[in-house]
Length: 164
Ligand SMILES: [Zn+2]
Image (tube, rainbow, N blue to C red; front, side, top):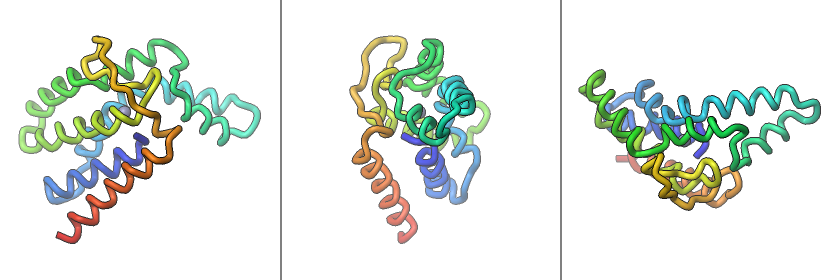
């Protein structure tokens, strides 16, 4: 899903489970993308800046891509979007943030969960990467229904917990 969705989800999780907004939980909520999507996003940004025509249209067209620009970008992306990376970060969280490691784990896990059915092509989820098993999702950038469904679920969750 888009980064803003993951940020709001992180804020929501921290409010529910820790009782206040936590930057750390938000960071774990977007960690797979902060590390994994960074080379691709920098490339995308650079190409947009270089483009002579309508930069906004170009940026959107790049966002709708289901292919990376270079193969190493796919490798880095998939290295953070799998269950082994989740276990690694669980281990890191348990050592450095023992009080809230379960929430940090949940934030990372939910990032993978929501990405699993909202990405395709080079960004499709391979839960046991580097093993080939792939979840057949549909890109959120190409599918308004998926975006609507996920945002509705998140907003319903926020409203439900704020009324409790
Ligand atoms: Zn992601």
